[in-house]
Image 1 (cartoon, rainbow, N blue to C red):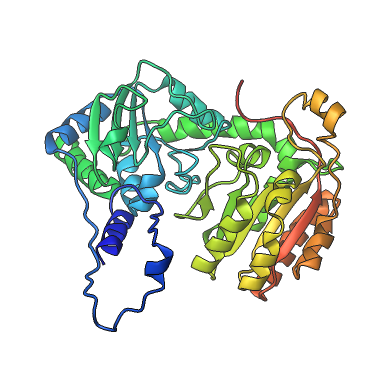
Image 2 (cartoon, rainbow, N blue to C red; image 1 turned 90 degrees about the vertical axis):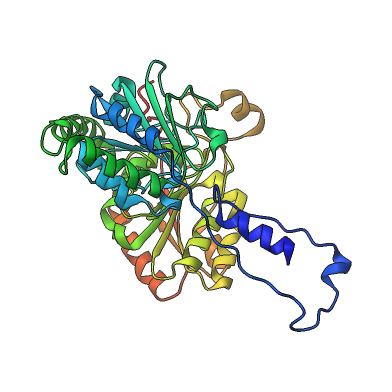
Length: 415
């Protein structure tokens, strides 16, 4: 009982994550008399940052010339999305969401900058580059090549559950260790104390500036998002997913590599947990089991993962797991025969090892595992195929869309 108490305490407190309890085989095989164990489930405990630090943080944000909020996964874990929106609106500060934090702030909101991996939107890049004060909430702020860089010279306010992350990778001016929800509630109250009940509402032109930049950026990418190319352009697939899903009733994820970096800027996270962002390393194939888990947790949601054929080679047999578990999901496979779509490719690996010579009828493979396979070869077929997949999932059938796509190498990364 003491081991389980410690396990559930760690599960419910601090940074969220799995807990392993290892039991020796002979102990696990022992019989225990009913009623011989006494166990009380441990509670969840939350902490708030120091009031003086909150006061200093709010003062810095109110006096900043161009502040920005960096929202992480801790906002989702703390169920603090409403507080984040209220705080953002109260001071009219734009919000950028990290890859794990995607869907912690509705990307359709006028103050949303979008989200990012190594790719992101122009408005996000602009604010991250030009901001003078950055407020990170619910984020470890771990440096990674799979995220957006934070230039030197900024005033940084850092909220995170684990104090060990503060001053870890960045020099922090104000540390706010604690639960993201409690922290934001304290920040909201302090803004009202310093700037009045309405804060800075209606006093800036931030939303209009974001819209102008976003509109110009999207205009540059619209030809690819609406491309009629054959083989089908990757961005057309993303555009069709975005246009044909009921975002409030769907859960979407990318796979590692090209699907991550092409999808992150262009498919918006809306309601909390409607998008699962991951992939700080290239562990190909995680999208399928991730969506099986999402479907088991939320059977009322349409669950879709977007992956390449290389990733399918790593976990494609889990389509059978989806069928067997009664967890109907939709898998979109970019069938382009390429191991990666980076500019220039891998000429030596291609010549010596045939890394771009993958061939497969993935729809037929899915059929062999009890799922429904749909082959898509023309852009105009994508939308109807997605609609059909939603219908089939509702009927309890797992679906794989085998989309014959191109090797699109362009990224919204401003490099």
